[in-house]
Length: 272
Image (cartoon, rainbow, N blue to C red; front, side, top):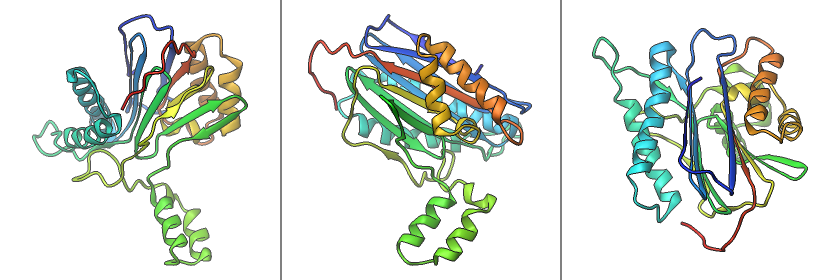
């Protein structure tokens, strides 16, 4: 399982669980990471592209850059600025990878990350992996997918293309083609929140590669998490197992990191 865990302290604020499977693929290109301190969590999921050597190395290199920079920071005065800077540094780390022949590897990876401290959460996204917020009886996707479909929607909204053209193109496989990912000469789109999401006791944050949402509906993801809320690891494992079961045309690598906010807010300090 390509997930690195760093549990520095037992937290009374957060619980975290993770799971990663190969699916029906021959090699693992996903890479996940989470760190837990007493009052904070950093988590990331990367889904690599470029075959065995390329995709696996790209996702790992991106996460390693993030982790190195996070631990080198004495403090993070502005989380949005930290994430924006990290996206550029992670992109450079992937873009400069070389293969065994010494030539540029030409690999890439998606990236979703969250940083939670006390009752506040920031997120960042490049590519088409997802971040869900599950609260009460609802589930919502926090980020958008950086693919050709997004370009089409923008062109439709601005009047550049007709609805007929949009409907035809949106149904093609090309609609899922990424327009932004780590490993480009310059990363094109980096999404995130400038103001923190205020967390409520019982909130779940789910980071995942596209192997989850291309196999399961939002309602299935919600039900799986809610039905297994006693143990975070079991909830994550059963989510990836369900994705494997319902994958229609072969299951992609699938990675899930689940974070549950317990609501231990002993003070009202804010970050970033």
